[in-house]
Length: 168
Image 1 (tube, one colour):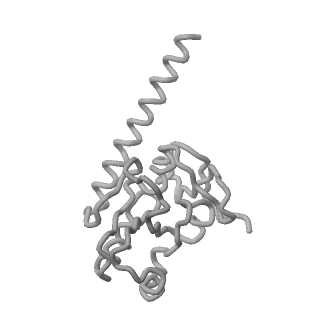
Image 2 (cartoon, rainbow, N blue to C red):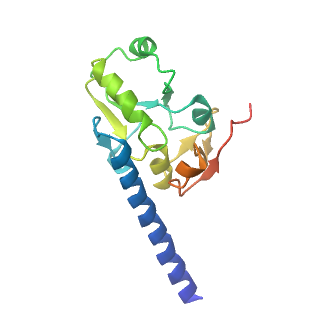
């Protein structure tokens, strides 16, 4: 039994290492790093930062970071954002599933004059993989994460993967 637990521990560590390497490669492939990354361990408090969720509405409805504002990706509206966040020096973190769509929105924010924009490295997947809390539409803690697709869902190693619209 002792060897079983040792094997299980080694297996779990190797899975985590593999997943991290795959995330690193994926982000290098799809991102230009035009918006500086912020890593989950560098976020002291989400209370002091404006969090913008750049995923589809159905993904946000399954779960999101506490107090995140949904801004979407394709339906991103600059005028609405300007009215919600008039302070161009405010600290802003954009995120999506892994950090690709959020980089696009981060670039738009920078072009709008926002000066303190960061992209959450690994997005909500990495947030959950590092065992941070996520919340549903009722602001109740949940383990569910919209995994976007079976392909991208492989990068989510913790939580419950959801691939459909949430129940209303």
